[in-house]
Amino acid sequence: MVLDTEIFLWYKPAASGLPPAPRAGHSAALLGFASENNKDLLGSFGAELVVFGGTRGRKWEGSLHVLNCDRWEWSRPKVGVSDVALMMNACCML
Image (cartoon, rainbow, N blue to C red; front, side):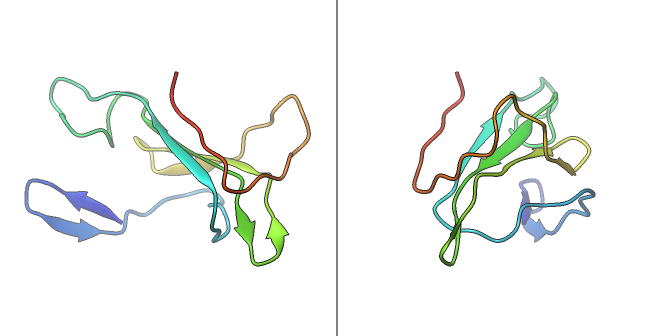
């Protein structure tokens, strides 16, 4: 859900691609910055939401998913190592 801060209305954007499965104990970080015309973090120049790891019941997840906040498009980038299942991990933007 996304909050439109001009009219204070929550809405569900129509996203394409394959989103991550529901999970708990994952980490997520918003990468990007606000533009001059848009002081919000979402919908700005190349902002991306990165979701990693977590659990689905007793199954540990090691998948990495990225949501492009300009196009509302999910992707699963290929990384140089195989999936490593983690839960209750942390991440931050550097």
